Picture 1 (spheres, one colour):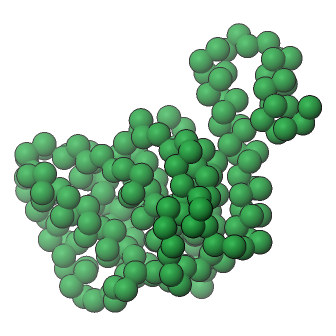
Picture 2 (cartoon, one colour; picture 1 turned 135 degrees about the horizontal axis):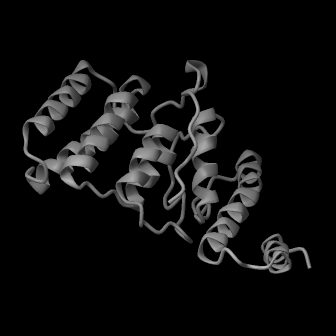
Picture 3 (tube, helix red, strand yellow; picture 1 turned 30 degrees about the horizontal axis):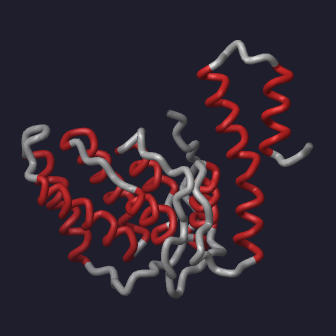
Length: 204
């Protein structure tokens, strides 16, 4: 599975504001540290499912409250995946990509469930009040989700910027589609690849 290519985190001035009614408190940092400590103290695959779910919810709540908790939240999700078989769902994809808007968090979610199917799923499955689209992190995550086959959805904000992000994602989706075809059928003739690319681009 091709994983999102990540660069450095976004500059602080471009970091998205939290969209949940959740204020950052020192308790978030303490709770994340305790969750990491607990996870490391438990044998692999031995943590109770309800505790895994609680730690997962904490990671998203903390990361949505303030950007400084992204690193700890991502670390917690990765360790839960590696040691406790955490498998995130499309709902967590939206949390990371839309609510939080962090590429590193989104990567951790996708890595937790490599076989998760996103084709045809809505990015905006509901209204997200006070969501700011014009942030580097959220623009990148929404573009990445569209490039994986998701669609904006019926609750997508009316925005020229969002339509531009959608247009920018099309070549990325085409490349992923063609890349998958070539992995499955390496001997595919070039003229067939050209026909497929033409069809995907709606260029007859």
